[in-house]
Length: 247
Image (tube, rainbow, N blue to C red; front, top):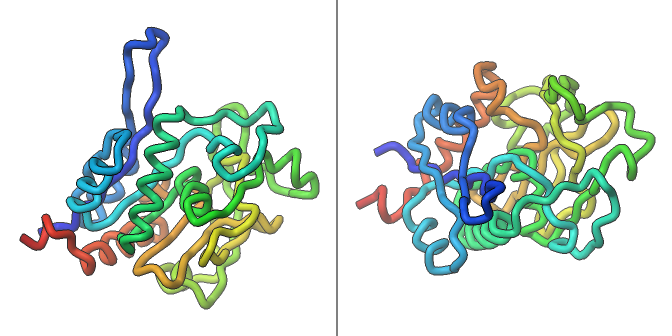
């Protein structure tokens, strides 16, 4: 049986406050399908019991990109007008889901905001706006008008999970974020950086598989090196089968 990969989803209210929607880019599910996994979308759930049931049914968990995490979640006040927080429903769910998955040592892959949530779930903090807080940053990591994805190079630590997958010390990535990791969470280490020293990848060596990527590999997963990241994640999930997939 193919490993089952749970994927969180965006959650928002329509103008009519009685209408709620969840959605996800097909790039995420397509990347998992092409890597040999079976993707399932996990709707926002408000209770720990449902989260526990979700985790019992999956072999790996991917956190997608999205809006900003409320700085209050990591002990800071909102400072900058460009901070646009996600819905509290999604934030509370994502955080609880991440904490529970890490505690259970379920293989996790975090993308952009998902990378940031993994860091926060481990007790870390974030730069709220790169341009405001790191004026010496030379790279524009995010454009406010299309095209959002800006290419730049990253350097990769040779003693890292990321290097073991890519077998390269440098690759070109896209970029569509105005926030990034500040203080590392417990057990977290940075393993890739942009040319202006923004953290681009985080790992947790004591975890079975824990990879947080600040860029959007799903948007360019037709490139072999980007697809290899999803394949490594799915392969790790296949080695850690859930009760559901082993039955």
